[in-house]
Length: 273
Image 1 (cartoon, rainbow, N blue to C red):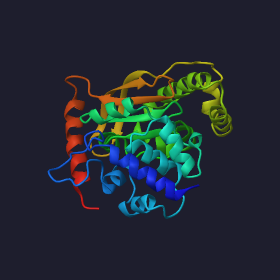
Image 2: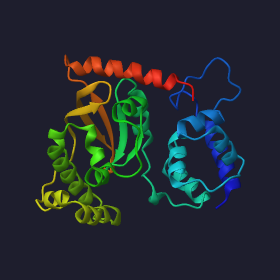
Image 3: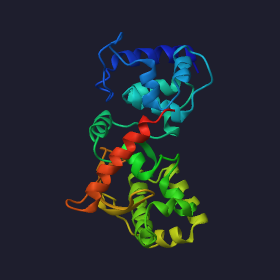
Image 4: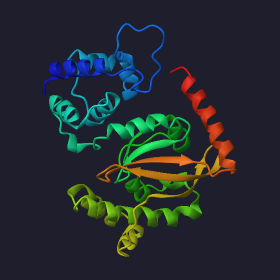
């Protein structure tokens, strides 16, 4: 671990990213061509004081989750990301995979649609504010694990839709496991799910396989009620990540619901913290 070198590396990467590249408004007065420290902190979901300490080479060793967030905020490529983790004394294979910059750029441009990037094991890597407004804050870990382990997770969908989602999640997982060559992460997930969920074990034993590309979904929102949307997935080249976005069927009530969701989201972001 070399926190001093980590701080210098963060400074150099911050200096090369413009606000426009990061999806931010530059504003009339800027003293630096790159991002400011507070802007990096905002993009990474960290406090400004914490990020300043990192650039100064001080403080505790950053977590893998924080390093992954900084890598996304600074638009690091695969080699830079690996270097960042090594400077911090961590290894990048222990956290969510590197997000291709082109996928992040597309997410930034989906400002009017709820959208997020998830892994093939259904771990949320990042999501825009409308996805947070529609689905709630992203929780750490795999949604697929939570679906079969924690009944409260299923409240996002109407109860009558739960059997369908269970089947689709398991079929999609089977495709992911084969794509990964039955690696430790995916096979460990299967072992755990078979132990805790009879429903999962029964579905897994059917042998069904189907990649989850797109479908019509009904999502339960605490203020808007049931919102029916089209959910589409765009995949990275290796298939380990997907950009998932939600759009309303033309002429459906969801058109107005998502417009209202945008207003609600803006109001929430405007509240003082």
